[in-house]
Length: 205
Image (tube, rainbow, N blue to C red; front, side, top):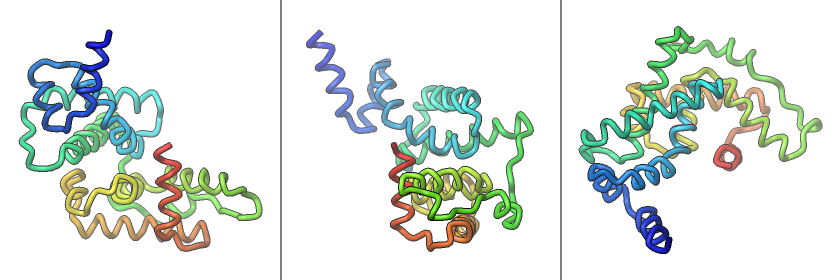
């Protein structure tokens, strides 16, 4: 038992390169730790695109299956998190296309604004404000909420988001600007870094 605990501790302390090496050598315990390390990232990205819980769980499993099957092709040309995020995004998009789900290529801001609900501060406690912001992000067009999640919640750079999604950097910046403008319009206050930190706190809980 002590040997098992020591082995688990050793695996959990490994960096990504060491975990990959162990996985490729057949250490499934190392893959379990890799899944645990990046599960939240995969759920955040996939969950912004696929919002039915049963479908989300299936797609997340598919993402990690692809990670395992293609790990020998990872060449350390980007961060492992970026590589896994790319697989999560592409798997989710392909799932939506396969089952003819709608993916907005050029979202209509006026329609998106109607989808959001008004916020009245006198009707909400501070904890409700947290929930409200989270709910509004979920109501944004899929591409808006995806880039918002990648940039502000997962803290990927524009270049990394371009690699993950295949969107040009200008499009990414435009979607971020529009997403925050829509939230600002409905919240009636500037969605500044402090507000985004609130979103970050509740999303990572």
